[in-house]
Length: 154
Image 1 (spheres, helix red, strand yellow):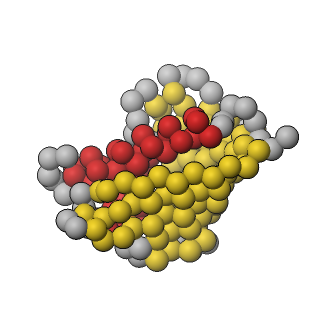
Image 2: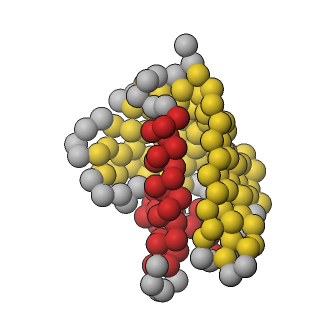
């Protein structure tokens, strides 16, 4: 039986909203942020970052199961927010779906990055704990990816 849950992660990022948004929108930076992970092999990646555009990827960790993501961008407000839906498949089977809103708000000498998500888990290979841990890890990587893109020390 599918199980629906919500998740919200807030992080202060040491960059202005436009620098953070650039990572969301630029294919090379986005791939570096989300898919160039230790132990991961990216099998495919494409990004059409516009309203109605898709992000599609396939990857695996240490030669294991193939993870596929398909993201449809519904609303994009440059330097402010991105609303999308996401499907995660493992070895061809849908394990979770979600509605995600990422927002950027100026704060002091950086910005507040918020990722709010409503997820439905269809398979026990994905659950709230695993998903929260992965999203937290990826959000924490943002500052380092931005620092490299701006040639500053993270």
